[in-house]
Length: 107
Image (tube, rainbow, N blue to C red; front, top):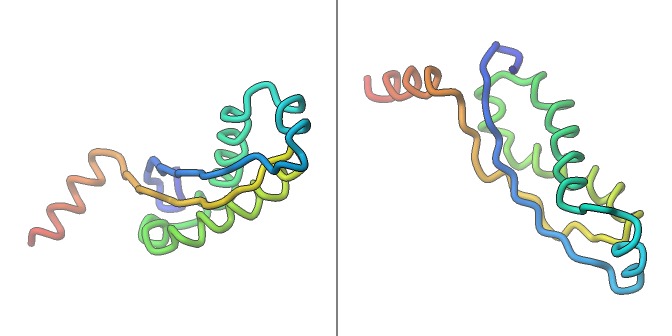
């Protein structure tokens, strides 16, 4: 739920790679890298996006992705991973909000 009481789903895409020099860390330090990365992404999004109104979420998709990338790089670098690219692929408001937005755009 965001500042203007709207539920949205953010779809993010994270591209990462193992740093060759830290391959041992990447292999032995994390049980499930995908879940760990997902957990950090959720934390960053939940910390920043609820302070925004819905329009700002759409307008600041790149800033959200940059924040996620910066935080992931800090944390995952310790485990032997490099974050190559982070994208906020889609912002999906809940169905009632989408219908209202479509009606406004159609008018």
